[in-house]
Length: 190
Image (cartoon, rainbow, N blue to C red; front, top):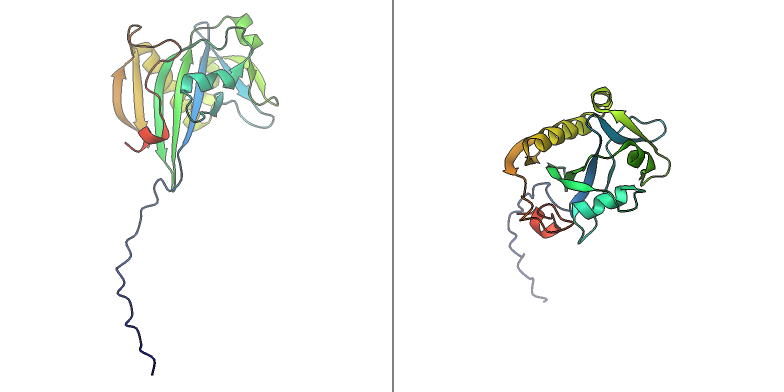
């Protein structure tokens, strides 16, 4: 007769929350200021105006990634600093968007810019005219970005709620080409 093995004891299964099953998506949006009253915005055919946005690759700072979003200036895009870091927890991954602001551009410089998607039309639009036309999330980020730029701060959001407001780094604490802490996959889960 063959011995019968006792059934293995099973431990109760715990439910894992739908958080961070996948690596985060990290992107950068650019508030490209033209003088005191304009923004450089792209618009794809059949879509509304939106903030210029692109991915942040591994090992790249948001300021470096912004250089690939809007191109066409000989010295590169003059990124001033990061003004908003917006984190949204989706069902299985976190979406992190850094909003950076450029130094004010001239109209000539703004006209030389091209968006990373060649199908897009790029224009300089008056800020007061275009803000109501932006998609809700982009409008929210743009308004917060302009406010924190005016106050000299960096705003950190999580799921639409303010987590903290920090003073912008001073010139003595910023390394060239970098305006603040870099978000990497390791620092996201902190």
